[in-house]
Amino acid sequence: MKARNFLLLLSVCLLLAVGQAYAGYIAPPAGYTVQETAFPIPYAWSVYGFDVLPSGDFVAYIDQDIVEVSRTGDISAPLYSFGGSIYGSFVKVHGDTIYFGESSNGTIWSMGLDGSNPTTLGTIGNNYDLEFNSAGQAFVSANPGWAGQKLFYFDGTGDEVVTGLSGYSGPLAFDSSDNLLYGTAYAAEGDSILRFDDEMIAGAIGGDPLTQDDGQVLASIDAPSDMALDVSGNIYFTSGSILYRLPNGSSSAESFATSTYYLTTLRCTASDGSFHMLVNGVTSGGNDLGVLSTLTPVPEPGSLLGLVVLLGLSGPVMLRVKRMR
Image 1 (cartoon, one colour):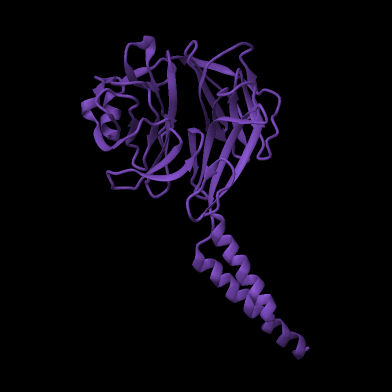
Image 2: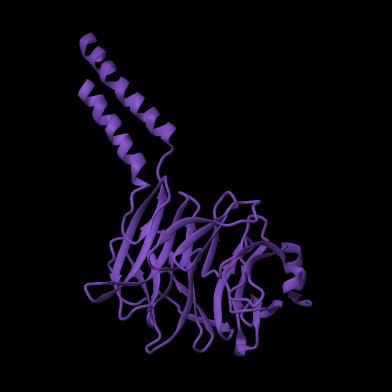
């Protein structure tokens, strides 16, 4: 029994240490494990974005194709192909539909999870990101004609809800109250996360657009690539080689996870608190790789120790049962 209990305790210690060990392309924070999905790509930086499918696998924008990527790195035949060089901007899974955009011509598309019924929804030049609120309304950040940053309510045509934003296009997100969050990118006056209240956004649909000054500055940050929220309302964003966290209610962002490569697209899965990131610029053996890294929280130490106690007690209990028989 002593040997059995020792092995159980050793297993728990190993589980607790997993989140602190560096594995692959991202150094996870304490309490998280990392899983890397690597796959060959035509050339460096040819993965434009991804999202998580209901199955748990990924849908990725690789060069001119939208493909499914399994957790083991197997790539499907194209779900959709543009048939020529294109600069992709985003891929977003919403319900049973995949949405994707490209900034070469500015078109925004939708199709089924299996690639069925690809449809052009409309055009917004230099589109960058798309996000849905809880009512299913779509919003897009873009810089049409390089005439300045704007946020659009996208119903097929595009209605400006926020205009006069400085810098390049940035990422969008919605909090649990449907307030719209926007991360400015390379703005002359410095970058920040802005919050536009849901009522302000609703009033701007079909009405006068808001300006950057109408947004509340939540924090000053480094120029973000993508942004997501967890179920507790904490804001996460990728910038350079760092995944940052802005705790709910705080005005100061902190480093959460780091890489030696560039982190771009970011997704958070609410059901298990995991984060998924696109790691760009990876090469191995002279070959270019796309890498999707998943950070998943390990069980709390208390629950693991409780498991050990239960398992440790199960031995004597089973012995008593056998003796009673």
